[in-house]
Amino acid sequence: DLLLRLREADADLVVPTCYCSGSDACGSGVYDRNSFAESRGGRERRRRVDPKTLVVSGYGDRAADGVQSLDGGRLFLDDLRTSRDAPLVPLDGVGATCIL
Image 1 (tube, rainbow, N blue to C red):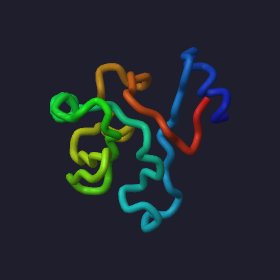
Image 2: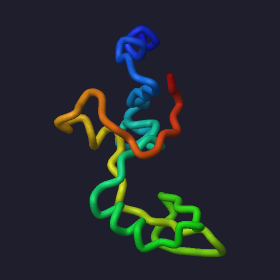
Image 3: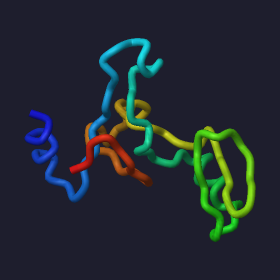
Image 4: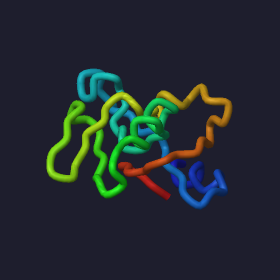
């Protein structure tokens, strides 16, 4: 069923929202928080970072030797469920447990 539903999207790249089966396994219930869209504030923060810097998320706001961690600027798939573009929303980054 999953593969059929992803293929029906008729897009070059499709990423589903993956959930945990147990309530205590992931806290929010969402397993995969690697696919995201940058928020307006996140885009603004990224503009102030040197383009040669690797930007990561989830490690607090800090920088070290060419790596900058910026938290709080990303909207994840579960945040985008109510987007006007849902269920197919444009993403700025993907990395998932399931990609077609």
